[in-house]
Image 1 (cartoon, one colour):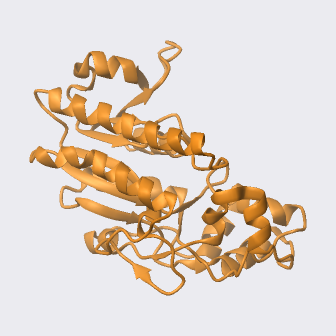
Image 2 (image 1 turned 120 degrees about the horizontal axis):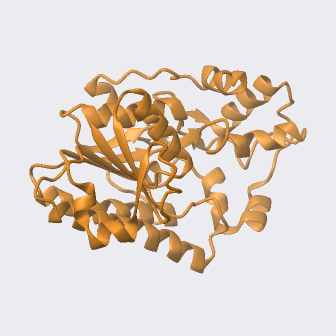
Length: 300
């Protein structure tokens, strides 16, 4: 397949590009800046080029849109506006380009987040669960998915909405952030510790993207999260055990709110999510359990 990836220079985009190339696919990375021109794979086009000449995406079999400003920053009103603008703008540009093509791609995968369900310590969410939150991540995810709904007007294009959980990766994602306090001997329960952490190993996430690109029976929302969510307290104990550090230093929720502001919701809130659509379609997780997934990251 020939696949274009919006946001292909980010952490997930780079890992997905590497996986797809290893599998024999051709990848085009969509970036704000042009490539250096050294001839190395993958090829790169800019967002401006796509808007001026959608034909640069001609013959693509699939498009993945991961583009958007990171949530891992203090949520000022200006930052939140940029997070929304960057997501909606990239989606608009890609949907307009797809509509302009004589031969549109067979599949369009729109990134989203499990935050769309809102936070809960008691409910379990699958793809049939409605958006349930009034917090910023939930509202943002609803708008991001809605921006891609224009694709559904094109029956020849299969739309997948990939609702991504907490990504565990060695170099980036949430794992280095969760691991840091343990390296400093200060790891422990955050807030109540009962909040659910619906996580996914980066290798399983990229495998799930490839699975959805190549499996014509998958469409609609897909939860990208391990089948075995854990509470923050449980995940902390796993990380502490893997790095040989104690899980002993509790951090009150009020302190995290004082330090992080509204962004503290990312660690004090949570949702228990199950990947019903992926499992039903036959996807097999390589790292379904947190303890083994963390050990794999530490082996690297």
